[in-house]
Amino acid sequence: MAKGSGKRGFGQDKTGWGFFGSELKRRREAAKLTQQQLGERVICSGSYIGQLEAAIRKPQLDMAERLDAELTTDGLFARMCEELINNSPHADYFTEAAHLEGLAVTIREYAPMFVPGLLQTPAYARAVVLAAQPLAPEEEVERLVTARCERARILDHPTDPLLWAVLDESVIRRKVGGAAVMREQLQHIVDLVRRRRIVIQVLPLDAVPALTGMLNLMTFEEGPPVAYIEAPKTGNLLDDPARVTQCELRYDLVRATALSPEASLALIESVAEEYAHEG
Image 1 (cartoon, helix red, strand yellow):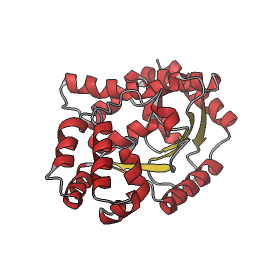
Image 2: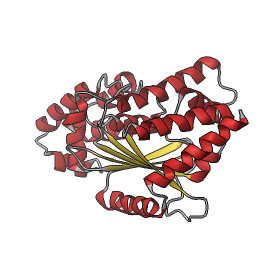
Image 3: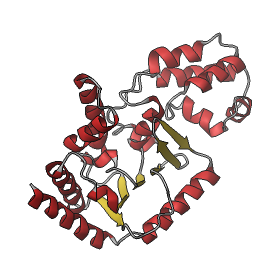
């Protein structure tokens, strides 16, 4: 994943990741263990250990605790997690996925409920945040909206990453924030498509989706592909090849059932015009 590490990953504070990785490598080698051997002992793959050492993957507290136990480091890795690493503006379960977005060569996403975060306008993002947290203080709402919009800076690059999103038709018809907010949101998507920056397809309401929830698939120049799935207040990042392959198959089935990119763009423009008339 070296390509992305030098130019993207906007909004992702990696303070402590490199120190964690270098210290892990030092302690592993002192214990005379290969990455694969250590991985087997702490219930993960050797490549995952390698990605931790290279500061590609965000260290997780439960893994840090297992490393401490195996390498007898008296809580060192757990303390690094808590004091140096867990300072992301994103929810804990999404922090690593948000970082990997900034390193990805391709991102393929299925959105069954809302416009994907990378494509959200500030007004739309605010409406989504308030729907989930109606009693949140204004400063917290602004923090969450800012963090979400900061992620979208990866699209400032003219071509990289390739973003291909399939939206359920209900996403473009659900009036999040009102007609004016939706018109702006859909026009933003149209503008990105017209600039040939993203590919969008719409899954019609009368189609039966092969997926029942949100899915984000990411590939990298170096390192295996990953899949990220999310439910309320929880998310899972999958890197097991068999599970990722199954997710890719489901995504391909959804994409095959969706309208063509040309027909999808025409539908989005039509719905945006309907919102304009409402305003």
